[in-house]
Length: 95
Length: 491
Image 1 (cartoon, rainbow over the protein chains, first blue to last red):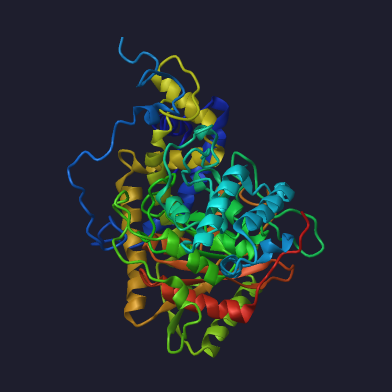
Image 2: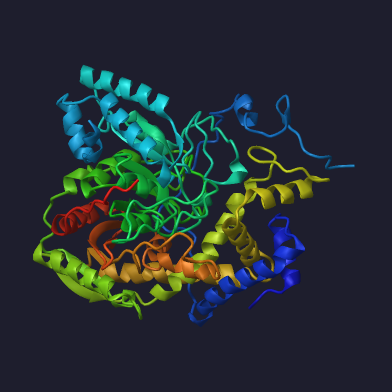
C-alpha cells in the first residue's frame, strides 16, 4: 500500500500537524518508504494468532477508588503558556 | 585530582567509604570534566549548584555512617526523566522550558540512595532516533574517533548523551531509556555497558512516554558491576505505574563473578545477516568462545520471526507514539503557536514544535490506527509481536539460559552519514536489539572489541524475563575476557 498527496494531507490533519504544500511530496516519499518497509509483514501467517495486549504475563493491579492526590492546581498550570487563575486559556471554541 | 573521573563507580564507592576523597571532590572533578567537554554536547543542562549541594549532603551522610548504596556518586540524567525544578525537554522544542513540579520515580530512588545529579543529558527528540541527531539541541559527539581521523562520529541513540558522557568520563553512570535499542546501541558505539531490563522491572512514571508497551529505563555505565549497582537502585515496584511488577529487587551485584558453568547459551542463526561485516561475525565467535571457556555450553537456536521484528516495531511504536504525543497541544505546557481557532493552534504548535523524525512517526502512527487501516497494519503487527515473543519462549523452554548476539550491525558512523534519503537506513541500526523490546525481555550490551578502524563493538546477551542476574554474570565473563576500552581524549 502507498499513500498519495491527498492522503498525506488527511493524515497530517488527523495528527494535528500543519503541513505546507511544499512539504507534501517529501513527506509522501518518506511515509511510502516506511510503508514499503512494513509491507513484508503481509507474508507472515497470522491465522489464529492472538494480538499481543500485554508483554509480561501479569495481572494489572487495581487501585483503590480513593482520592489520594490533589489541591495542586498551582502546579498543574505552572507550565501553561496562557492561563487565567487556575484556567487554561484557548481560542474561542463555542460560538 | 582530575583522575577521580577515571574511577569506576565501584572504585569510587570504596574511596568514599574510606574517606580517601569526598563526594564534593569527586563531584567537582566531574563538573570540571563536563565544562572541558562541552564540544561533545552531551549535557543539555548542567546543574553544578544542585550537584554540590547534593554532594555535601552525601558527605554528611557518609560521615554519620548512614550512607545509601550510591552515596556521593555523580550521575547524569537523560533529559527524558522529569526532574523537579530542573528543565526537562525530551530534547524537543515542543516542551520548551518545561520545568516539572514532580520527580520521576527512578530518579527519586537514585537520590534516595544518595546519588548526585550533575545535569541533564542529550538524547534524540522524544527518544526517536539511533544517532542522537534528532535532538533539538543538536547532535552529540562520540568520544571515539576512527584511527587517524578527525571526523566526529555519532554516539548512537537515543541515549547518545548518556553513552557519550559515561565513555568520556563526565559522569560515573547515567540513566537511559530503551524502546527499540536506545540503551544497548549507544552503549555498543561507545564501549560502555548498557542494560535494558525486563519490561515492568523499572517504573516508567515521570519518564516522557514514547511507546508505552516497549519503553523501559536502565543504566549505562563503564562496567557490568557499575551497571548492576545502578539497576538495583533504579528497579522496583511503583504503585504509580501499573505495569511495574511487584517483585523483590535482587542484589544484582552479587551476580557479578558468579560461575556460568553449565549454562546453555543460544546462538540464533537468524541473526547471521547477509552482508554482515566480517568483524562483527568474528566478534560474535570470540564472545561465544569466551563463554565456552568459562564453562557455558553453546547451542544453535532458531528465532524464525526475527526479520519481522523491525517492521512490526515500525507500526507498533509509531502507533503508541501518536497517541502519547497527542498531549503536546500548546495548551497545558510547552510551546504554543497561535491560530485563528483551536484546531489551527494545535496544528501550528505541533508543526513548529516537533522535528522531522517525530512528525514522520506521529503521522505514520495516526495512519496505521485510522479507520480502514487498523486491521491491516496495527492488528497484524500485534499478532506478529505475539509470534516474536513465542520464538523466545520456545527457545527458553528448551533450557536455554541466555542468547548471545551482536549488539549492532556496524560500529559508530559519521554525523549526517545515514538516513538522509531513506529513514529506513537509520532504523536498521536496531535490527538486533528491537526483538528484545517486542518480547519484553532483558538485554545487555557489553563492549567486546574494536573494528579495523579502532572503533568499539559490542555483544548483546538476551535473558529470560526478570533474569537480569544471568545477564550480569555472563556480561562479566565477556568484560573480563575482552578487557576495558577507553577512548583517546581529543576534546
